[in-house]
Amino acid sequence: MSPHPILLAGGAGIVGRHAAQELRVARPQIPLLMGGRDIARAEEAASAVGHAEGVTIDLEDQDLGLDGRPVSAVAVLFTDTSVAGLRFAQARGIPYISISPGIVEFGPEVATFIHNPRAAPVVLGTEWLVGATSIPTLEFAKRFAQVDNITIGAVLDEQDAFGPAAEADLERQTRTMPAALARRDGAYVWRIGEDARGRFHAVDGTLMEASALSPNDLLGLATATGAPNVEFNLALGTSSTRRSGGQLSTEIIIELAGTDRAGGPLRTRHAVVHPGGQMPLTGLGVAMILERLLGLGGQPPTPPGLYFPHQLLGPRAYFARLDAIGGKIIELEVL
Image 1 (cartoon, rainbow, N blue to C red):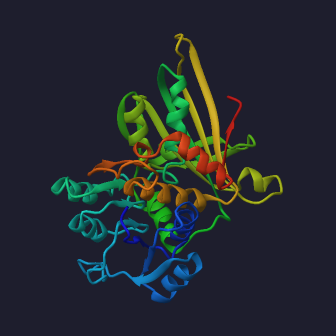
Image 2 (image 1 turned 60 degrees about the vertical axis):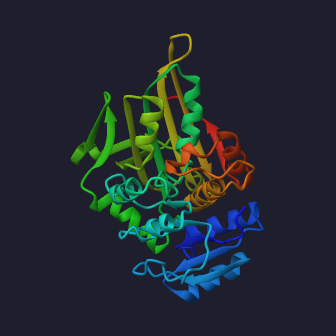
Image 3 (image 1 turned 135 degrees about the vertical axis):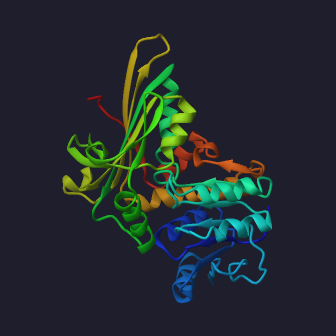
């Protein structure tokens, strides 16, 4: 195991702090670099998590301003339009994950990987809450002989915590991108105008008005299951728990339809819920992927390649960690 620290670029933000805390609980011996543009915030975040150091990140410097300091892996937790973090990781041959570029934006990362595919493992981490959607969905799909429809509905409580980077990402992916991707009858199509509006029922049965979104789950789930119809809708509003008088939560509603092993029709409906909102699940996914990339859980380090999060994290380990941080999976009535 490398003694060098993991660099969390954007570590002073909300996702970075959750990822660091999850790493600290699961891997207390791992040193961390909490990187950011504001050194005071980075140092404060490092002090809060312990066994960490705040550093200034300079995306215009090919060494990110680290002056040759050894690093074992890089997680970029904001939109790095210059792909500086990935180039830095490839130059050093160390693992890399990013969680912000949308489907229509990850071309620069893919091109950088293709140019030097043997340098290091690269994870395209922009799945909804970094594995919290794709890993459960693929586990539920094992009951099916054929999955025909995958419909994902995510509830983002309007009171949920947003850092500046997360807010900018959400704004960009829901309002400034011209269309959202979906798969229909085996073809990838763009949802625009009225077609980009959706509806789904929350955990408590409330009908939520939603908008189309296209996180990487769409591509990963369609490819892994062969489902000809896949779509994702995001509702921003009141979560089921807050509507009942409790604290906010994040909800992911996963609906599958197809045929069972006996050839009969089968439909399932589940929810992934966490009472702390979106950030604990995002931080969990980032932490677990970094552990897997570095081989910290007893498995060998991940070899060079281009990956989605669900290709690296097994359901048993993920569900155990989800439960440990207070998340749960609920089987819902099929509507």
